[in-house]
Length: 217
Image 1 (cartoon, one colour):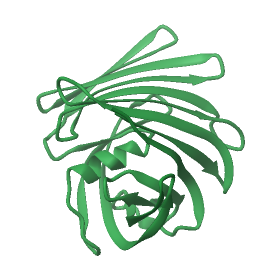
Image 2 (cartoon, one colour):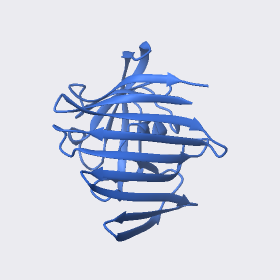
Image 3 (cartoon, one colour):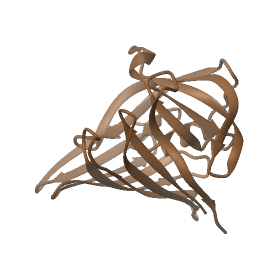
């Protein structure tokens, strides 16, 4: 069992937090979390999520409850073989999606744990990069938007963590053919846990910072 807490920033100002936990299950792993943002975040809201993963960190299912004020949206996603199914319920209406989910495809959700899942399935050296298809799931419908994603490992350093200074690598994430100026960068420890991230390709404008990390029995 591992749990943590991120602080969330917008334009350099603290505007929310995310609490998460990761535990082993009979089939692999289960991740649960809740993320809440307030002004000056551009979209104050609350997201509760639960994801199931195989033992090699491949997502097999995802449930999301997104609340903006008094409005709530529920999204249920699951993989069946190499197909991805989604059902979104909002205001009495139902939207369903289905598409390909090949073995090398990733899933991005509104949490930096998505990056941990990617790093767990790939090896990166300084200067190395991986490009792959990704199913991006997020506002306004928590539905799937297929894209391509590029991870580049750009440097190694010692970064402060809730447990003290640790060795970490910095990555730059972008969505080709869009340039890295529209992406973001983050530092992750040797276990792939994101320690801090920044808007844009340089570590200048804070986006998230890990402030709690706990290992349980």
